[in-house]
Image (cartoon, rainbow, N blue to C red):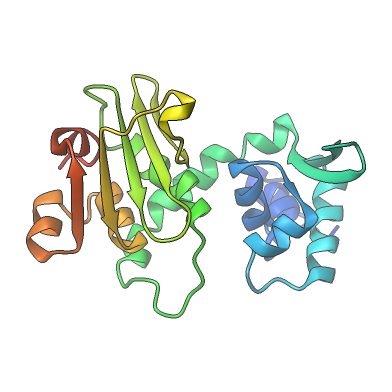
Length: 212
């Protein structure tokens, strides 16, 4: 392990997670445990040999561990309890990144599951839930749902009535506008006026989530 040679908590933390791709690997595992191929797919641009090296380093440092999944023949990676404590600093970095996100994605890659971490992180410090609601997020690709409870916000795959779940409303927008609404950089009224957001269903449920 490379060392800064400094008796400082930040320096020692960066020795573990400061290398390129390490925190993005943690981001993927905060969303859900993942197999190696899932991590390759979820980290556009990473070389497979580099991913293997980073996983090995994170495992030896006690951030990541492996377990057998499914029928017991496939290795799955997950965060250790200590590794899971990186959620708070990563969510803080997501909120800090708001000015960097305003210019939009340009040619950068995007995967819908990244919203599962970003949207709750942006809403948590800004919006106090006033009622329970479930809002669908139609951003292209896999449909997502944003659940609001007194405990906070949660984004995951959209579940249907057969699972006992009903959407109060659905928001259709590009991911950048959903992030803008969650961050408070774009108001719902402005988004509607600009025509960049469409709402089906109970608009008051959407206002509960994306409050000004």
